[in-house]
Length: 423
Ligand SMILES: *Cc1c(COP(=O)(O)O)cnc(C)c1O
Image 1 (cartoon, helix red, strand yellow):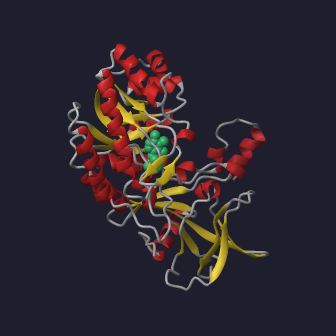
Image 2 (cartoon, helix red, strand yellow):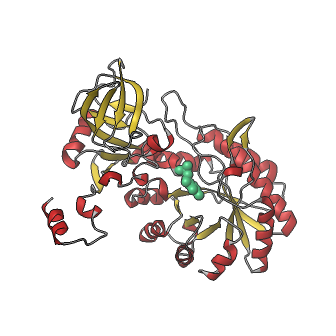
Image 3 (tube, protein in one colour):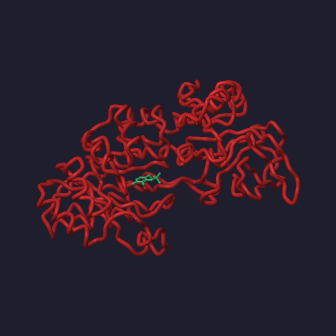
């Protein structure tokens, strides 16, 4: 059974104070997760987690992570703005972008970020837009299939990211000739991996590659960036990743490949997003309609514009009917939002307790790629975000979007302005 970090009573109090739907985040859960991660990699001298801002871009949450010693992983201009506003600079920012606009590189260089280049052609592009730094990280794509043991976990060959093995050596030579002194190597080969062996397999590929490239070019690699990809158990029957096992697996690969090499100390960096916030954010929504036609539907006041993953990937998100945790799951429902899109369903054919109008439903594991993937289709507005603090109090960390926010990017005419004011 999947547990929540709040109960029905608390959920109703938040609903009364802030309105539904809302996202609520668990400070304690996030902090504990970060500490588990840091402990698992404490054997590595320079280890650092760069929280991937895109997973959940609320600065109140990112501040908590930075206070725990995390840096930030940015990939756009506005994500860099969040980093700057929180006082991050230099080695505390990893800029891992792709198809990067010139002004983003200029900004990233202004903040003296670590820059992770997605492509060999970005060398000249960065040189012309912000200039080359002393240290450059390169994004590698080994192509083909990515296997952990015998199982295929991803298809890097189909992915738009990173450079080929041949380009990698060429890029290093080019950068060395242009005066770059230190290097990092990055790859992101599979997403939402709940296998304990994922990071160790990825690390072994990256470690072997840095040793090879060092032999070929003499380049000094000071870090390896394992990127994101550690998964979370969305389904009740899935088990969480054992961070201790992950850390030890990477350590073994390090001692086997890096320790006997000429490289000396190589720092491990990670850019986890989902692992950090995913399980610690929940979307709470009220059941507002029940409809029995060819199927049984429950209509919520949240929709795919608030949480896109089920509609976009068919992703499973566990749903708890608050106050009915122990009731028998003897009804089968499709749980829908109100978009004029038939894929706007949080669950299909889900066995659940009987749902009455007014019940609050908690959609689990929405803390990553949830609010931040939200959109405004059908003129639907973003919900508010609430932080449940370690002391049990709650804090509104983003107000709900209002029609005036949605209409803020144009000036149409006076009638429009009047309607916005009135509503
Ligand atoms: C999305 C992304 C991450 C974070 O991935 P998670 O699956 O949330 O851990 C890290 N690095 C890069 C470059 C990404 O695009």
